Amino acid sequence: DPEQGHRAVRIAEVLEQIRDNGTSRDALSLLIVKLLQLRLPDKRIEFASEMEIKLIDASGMSSSMFLPNIWAECEKSPDERSEIVDRYVRVLAPVEEEEEVITRDMVVAIIREIEYREYIRAEDRELVTKHLIGDLWVVYAIDLPHSMTVISRKQIASLSLAGEDMLSIGVRNIERLLGQISMDPYGECYVFSCENIVYASSLLLLEYVWDRAAELVQCDVVVAVPARDTILFTGTTNTKGIEELRTEAAYVVKNGNHVLTETLLVRRDGKWKLFQ
Image (tube, rainbow, N blue to C red; front, side, top):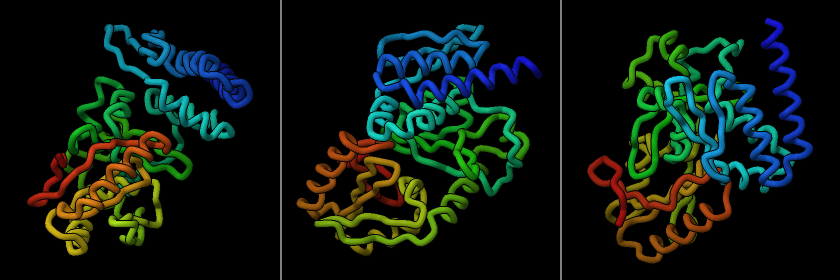
């Protein structure tokens, strides 16, 4: 298709501009709008504010892209600007013509913040996400060799998946990808490490891990998951440990990448609850 080929060339040009010239927030925001217009020609793309881009379809339904997280990531990793922006945009405009053969082994259950869920097409959110606790959501995605994308309706249908299938399969695959898991002392707390740290937050979905964690602390387990690659815990009776969790969570959310939440969680009766 000549039109698709022309659009692909223009997308590559915009990504190159982002890499070379997206140094200011204003310039970066304008280039993101241009990229979205190319990737989503059937939608109206406009600024709702200097921090939010609206995507509106023909029926009037809309979704949003919030810019502060993108700005922060690009400023911390300027050499990866185009890759960072492309990853965010692909959440809203997944590439339909992927040549990858999709199998059930590629389905993963990942933990994301509520803002990430807002990036997903409004009509797909209930299908591809599941509320976990507080402002954390389980998002079903496809783990590809060089990227990860939210699973599409087409892929769900091709794999004959239902909601509970996605959860059990996604958790099983995450367990495999995490590899060896260890819990190491960290001040008054413990910190998790694993072979594939980018999926560390998905440890929240592995029940047996928290049974093991409970053996290391007194009373219930209190957990901080401030970023996708950072997860710490202590016991409810450890006052110093809980203070350390709060401090660490606040620091990571303010200064880290791929942040999730400052909210602490507690594991009671096999369920996650908000820790007060």
